[in-house]
Amino acid sequence: MANIMIVGVGGQGTLLASRIIGNAVASMGCDVKVSEVHGMSQRGGSVVTYVRYSEKVASPIIEPGQADYILAFEELEALRWSSYLKKDGLMIVNANNIDPMPVITGQAKYPENIPGILKDAGVPSMFFDALAMAKEAGTEKAVNVVLVGALAAGMDIDKEIWENAIRATVKPAFIDVNLKAFQMGYEIKKA
Image 1 (tube, rainbow, N blue to C red):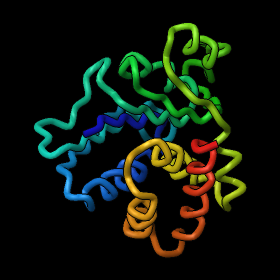
Image 2: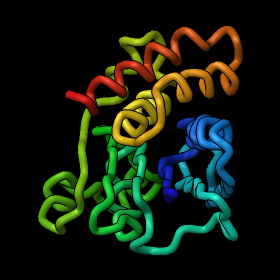
Image 3: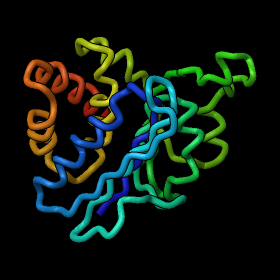
């Protein structure tokens, strides 16, 4: 059983990441519930997707302090949703910043040193530049799959199951680049 949150901003591929995770665990015979919650998700608003799986899942919603894993597509979203992580959970964070509208308009300032803030708060987290890895894999749009790779490396699910889920979920023209992005994320978590 696991509770996984995927947090980011609109247009980053959080829903595709949730579908890959859902397909992977469903292929093992688990009951999977996926729910997407978002504000202004069209390119820039906060997006949260919940993925829960077990023998039987009653609700897709994850309460504060109940997430085993949080995949954060950028640092502010990691900070915003950190209270949802279990004490022994893990937050996997793309070490990039995307300014929200209040920062763009000058009404707010992007917080400095989010990794330090989370460390001081005792939030177990790993930060790495998933965007650079996605670009190296062939497209910056594969940040989501790099993060899924890092998640997969820490879970007790065979790597081949994840790779098959990617093949079953992404469009055929993008399978190779996504498998490469997955492998890069998988290797960084194993390092």
